[in-house]
Length: 237
Image (tube, rainbow, N blue to C red; front, side, top):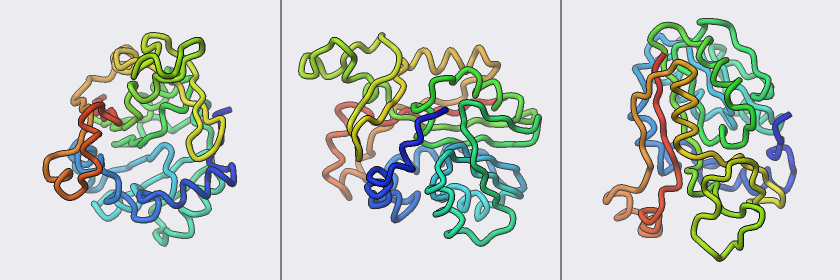
């Protein structure tokens, strides 16, 4: 089963205080770039994998989606999402993305934000996503950039290189909001080749960094120009 770190009280308390948790999508610096990758949502059926507090689910409905399903492994996340949602066209479901099943051809868009780098069995999930999309469907996701998931490889000194053991894929343990958070490090090539092998066409890739306008508004973001914190990908069926 996926590590359910979001039901750890210490982690959940810290996560709930993050700007993107309090203010939603507009507080996520990568959101404008990720939003630009989305197809027209009018009348579409959408599923959000790792929906968290349901911010994207509610956005999708406001953008005209006919139905939205939010899926998360965390009871804490889903409870907060349900508290914040009053829309019968949005449903929330608890499921482990490692063993997820979805109805064949049921969706026009599969969306996932900063979730897939927690999963070890990504090939099975990509297969599930591919069969769940109808013809012309889109798969749009963001992950922590592999530059960020590469440090702290076993046997590497943490101060040796900015990126440690980049080509050594597998679990990496970090202390972020709580001790012992496990993330799966993969190279960019692995993510993209897995998409291609699953049958997706790669439509757009962005190694996100702040724009000049964003840096003018948030000078503290300038350091993100040195190494991109997020990888954004759009795939088509």
